[in-house]
Image (cartoon, rainbow, N blue to C red; front, side, top):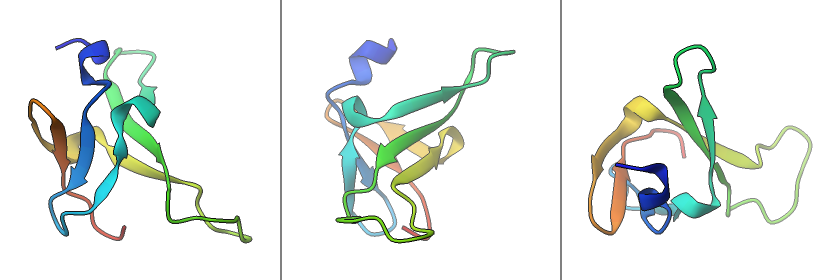
Length: 80
């Protein structure tokens, strides 16, 4: 599957069914030595304004992706 084919898919957390965002809004962290995807960075929609020490993004490790379907990507992350 090409990265461009993932663009329109929504990311959903398996643990609580929460919608985390669209893959098109994310950044991809790639290991420059192997070319493998390490994680996805999504903007955190819960942060309305930034306070000291708050994260502005959600990092989803690539190994947390459980299923890539036609319309969505199912991930399993804790502490969201």
